[in-house]
Image (tube, rainbow, N blue to C red):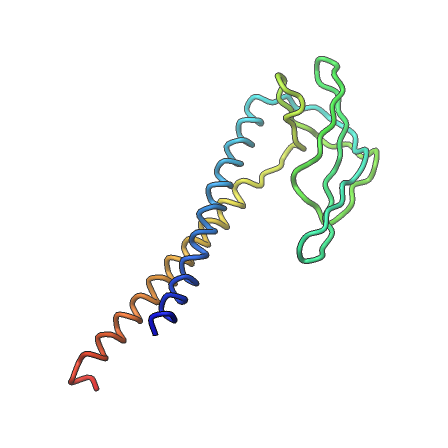
Length: 152
């Protein structure tokens, strides 16, 4: 019986732990995105390729590879961090935001993944805490019923 109770608590706590990691990652990423948008210069670049990756589900996603020129005339390339289900057409124009001190720190403009990670993390934490409280309440109730002579 104790092993089953431990398993139930692990099942309840695991989403909260994963959610905490996702929340932390999302907040850090969001901060980085805000910082880049705050100091970054915005220019128009051209898609040169689509980088294809396969997710664990088997679904293929695409990331645009964009060549752009900084305001000082330096050529640079960035790969967009936000995946798309559709391939990007070579030659298409996309806006890019880059750090003027480090043009390698760049991304396709409008990329906002940090808030999504943070929201999923917060929801997972909420689910884990709710499940833990529910399991704990049920365990306390069953213990109270087991020791109560009137309840039997």
